Amino acid sequence: MVPLHKITLLAATTALLSAPAFAQSEFRDCLQAIKTEAVRQGVPAAVADQAFQNLTPDQKVLDLDSRQPEFTLTYGRYIGNAVTPDRVAKGQQKLAQYRSLLDSLQREYGVPPQYLIAFWGMETNYGTFLGDFSVVRSVATLACMTKRIAFFTNETVQALRILATNGMTSSQLRGSWAGAMGNMQFMPSTFMKYAVDRDGNGRIDLWNSMPDAFASAANFLRGIGFRPGLPSSDEVFLPQNFPLEQADMSVEKPVKAWAAMGVRRAGGAALPASDDPSSIILPAGWRGPAFILYPNFKAVMNWNRSTLYALAVGILARQIAGGPGVMQAPPDDDQPLSRETVIEMQTRLARLGFYSDEPDGLLGPKTRSAVRMFQKQVGLPADGHPTPELVQRLMQAVR
Ligand SMILES: [Ca+2]
Image (cartoon, rainbow, N blue to C red):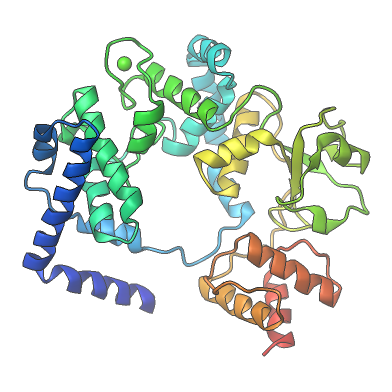
């Protein structure tokens, strides 16, 4: 069944496009403004004209863009889908296949081979899903027909720069519906800033050249802060008396300080003797696994803002390199919450004075921190993780 709010959104978009003459002339004006900026950045006018010739907005892109997740992602479900035995096995094969290239990239860029393979697996399932949308059309549609004007205007300008500098036609520039391209799903701006021609044929080809794709990913990771040293994260065991309110990304301590509190690596080994700043998180609550996040976790989050994505990269990389999987299972009764439930929860947390933002249905750090305050107030373990039981208890406590 299509939920009501989606019907409304679809109706709104359709209404917008049923005034085609109006929409089309607005779209042409928008493209003209993008072309002006592209020319200012050195793109030949002819390249922009060729790319924008007969270009129309892509309704499919707008439909995909207006889709909102109806449920929160649980750690268990996300990691279960992202780190499958098949993905680990394929990753190990790919690691062996590209070993010498990846070793030389590690020497140059400081990024371990298993991370490049893990990103490849996460982004496109090792090159299986590259996306077949026209990137110029996608990013121009998003620039001209959504509210993220500045971001996608720049992406469109950068896409035109790729055409101009890399000798491509716009029909060759294919990617995901939101403009991410090639084996590593680079946005046009990332391509222009970080992509490199590793195989030396004079063109950057992130679709067909694995040397180009891997070297570009390594260069990007180094650019966004990945440094040789500790991995991005490790699974840990917490001592019995661990103060749960410190399991939060905003609480940073030297690795040694966590070790002194009794935190150990999962399995019982000591944490690395390091002064690097680090945090502990409990992505499925206190009954699930705990992770320590090292500085490289932030670099991985600069690639993708999702904490679960970044955890998945670390877990996958470890297993691809032959390491163990996660030892502690998530609680099997952990349920995704609907957007509406999260909004109800936020509204009630606001009435208690624990939450002050606009209720948005998203489980971000502020909502988790508000949940923690409620848990403390009613004497529950303060892990900031909303289970269905907690939501029920909150609904009963606040009306
Ligand atoms: Ca090349």
